Image 1 (cartoon, rainbow, N blue to C red):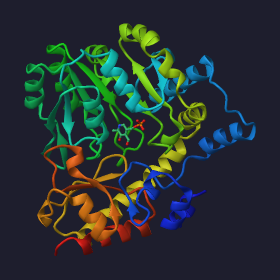
Image 2 (image 1 turned 90 degrees about the horizontal axis):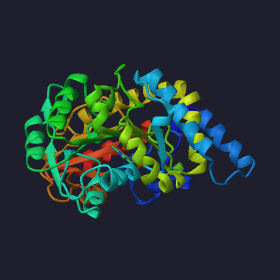
Image 3 (image 1 turned 45 degrees about the horizontal axis):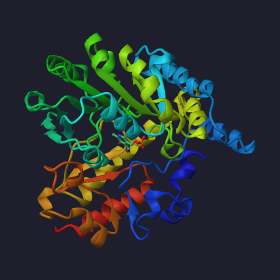
Image 4 (image 1 turned 90 degrees about the vertical axis):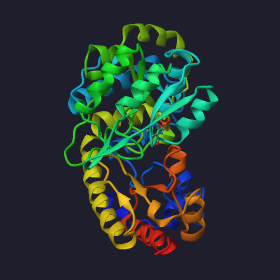
Length: 386
Ligand SMILES: Cc1ncc(COP(=O)(O)O)c(C=O)c1O
C-alpha cells in the first residue's frame, strides 16, 4: 500500500485491522500508543510474506539471530556514523526486555535509577516491579527544545543512584539531544562510576535533516559505561513482531551477556528477525518517505493546534510521531485523560503517567491519516473550556 492509500483509511478500517491503538477504546479515536497507521515498508512486508507462504514458523537458529547484528551494523555505519561489530549486537523481544536485563544483571542491585521526565509511561511500573526507586529529573525548557537538568542528575548520583536512563530521541517530547547536550552526561556518569541504559528506539525517524548521535559513540568512557537498546519497531512499525537489539560496547558486558542473555535471546519473534533485517537492509528509502510524510503531519498539527487549541503550548518534535501538549491553561487537573476520553472521545495519554510534574500535559500520536488528525484536534478543542 502507498501513503495515499494509508491516508484514505477511516477509524472503522483501522479498527477492523485490530490491535491496541484502535480497539482498546472502540468508541474513541486511539492516540495513546506509539504505533503508526501507515503500515510498513514493502521490503518488510515481503520478508514476512515469504515466511508465511512457507509456513516457516519454527525456532530461530543462532545464524539467523546473528544476521540481525550484521544488518544493524550496516544501518549504524550508514545512518548513525557508528561503527558496531555484528558480534556486539544481541537480540531480545522488546526494548523493555533489555531494560529488565539491565536492572537484573548490568547495574548495581537495589540502587535508585535516574529518569529524566517526561518519560515513557511503562518505565515507572517496570522499575517499581524490579523494586528500584526512581529519581525523576525533569527536563528543562531551552530555546525551541528541552535539555537535561545536569545539576539534578549530579545530585541523584550523589544520593546513591547508579543507573541513568537516557532516552534519545526522547518520548514524549520528541527531542533529539545534541552531542553538546550529551557530553556533560558522560562526565557526570563517569565521575560517579555509574552506568547508562541508552534507549534509542526512536532514532530512525528524525525531522529537518537532523542526525542521531548514539550515546555510546561519544567517547571510550561512554562506550564503557553504556548498554544501548534499540529496535526497528518504531521506524518500521513492527512492535508486534518482537525483535529488539541490544548493543554492548563494553567487552565485560558482552561476556556477561553470553550467560545472562542466553535464554532471553531465544524468546525473540522468528518473523521479527526477518522483518528487522529487511528494514535495516532494504527499508531505508521507505523510511525517508515516511519521515517526509510525518513532517507534513507535524506541520498540519501545528496549524490545527493554532486553530482549535489556542491556549495550548507545544514545542514541535524533532523526531518520531508523538506530540506533547501543554494544556495546563485549560485548567483540567488530575484526570485530563479520562476527561478527554469522556468529553471528546479521544484516547490520548495523561501527562501524569509520564512523570509527577506533568499534570495538565497530554500526549497524542500524529502518525494517523490527516482527516483523523483534523477530527481529533477539533474534538479536543470543542471539549476543552474556551
Ligand atoms: C522510549 C521507548 N522505549 C521503549 C518502548 C517500548 O519498546 P518495546 O515495545 O520494544 O518494548 C517505547 C514504545 O513506545 C518507547 O517509546
